[in-house]
Length: 131
Image (tube, rainbow, N blue to C red; front, side, top):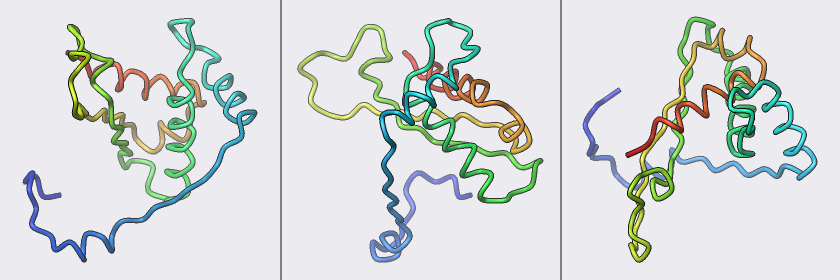
């Protein structure tokens, strides 16, 4: 992959590569998923619904892609830094402060682990985005 921050791509070409998928998850499904992801949470507090759902989707999408077990699978999760830094961003600040978390695992690790272990990988990556 090209490492340059700015890549000159015509808007038409870039827009044609964007794909939007929408889905809906019932509150009951999300609650069950969260319980499943929190079975052995080391902190005892459990994982957030977002972490649980992202972990589930990461496993399912990776499985559907059918890539080799030795390949590395990685997510890019946007993190709102307002809640992750000390001292916090000033209350009146108007703007976005977003950084990225990059949980990664081999496909074998990702697909052979129960959801709670995958949720821990996601949680740790998000927690590493701090001040």
